[in-house]
Length: 119
Image (cartoon, rainbow, N blue to C red; front, side, top):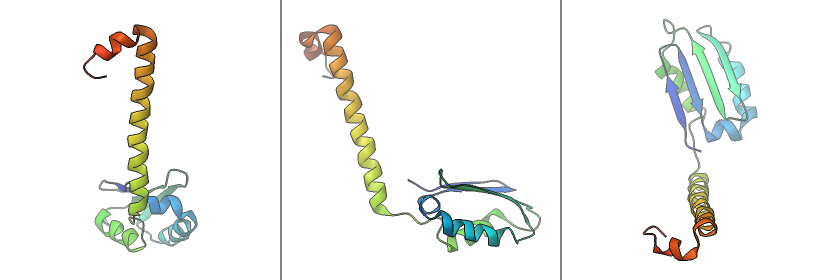
């Protein structure tokens, strides 16, 4: 999973591998974040690996908040996981192409499919 960050003037949303794989540590840090008066709401979607934080921009900036969560590892990724994710995507494309070719052979016949330039 690649890290996703979306920030606006009053909201910061982060989706990352760390948030997905360490829900207990994230929940503990969220409790600490809730003690900050400038933070109004925090939504933690454990199964999506996502946290959305709404805050008062007069008291806290998105960049400062992002720096804080980064110091707790929320933006950390593992290269091994990215390798596996890319392999799955690549394998899925190959599988879909193979299934499409089988379907074309059934409908059009193997001789016509072999004559096509993409086969």
